[in-house]
Image (cartoon, rainbow, N blue to C red; front, side):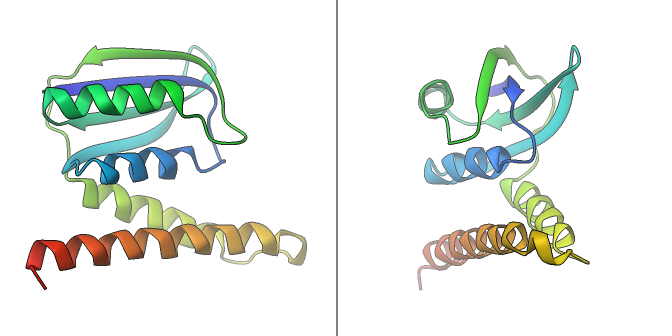
Length: 138
């Protein structure tokens, strides 16, 4: 089954997409994408998920109940999604590239922000290594 989750509120530039991707990884979701957008003039995050119904329900429950620090959810909408959802690795690569680019030419006063971005990269790398080892039966 394919699902589109549209989450509006204070959801940009605070690691919410990384948070959602980590939840998808935790449930073993192979096809997942997440991106920032604006809907009706409000910050929004859109998640595209392709998984079994049981996993979709578990993901929805987590999205509805777990809100990281700094995130303010105003509205969550769900809809069926008809198109193809890309592999989660593509989403992870995009997020890693954006985090890395955010650290280029960082002014001194923003170094702590850069360190936070690097920590996110390391966390993603650990998930990738763990997933690869499990996949390859190493």
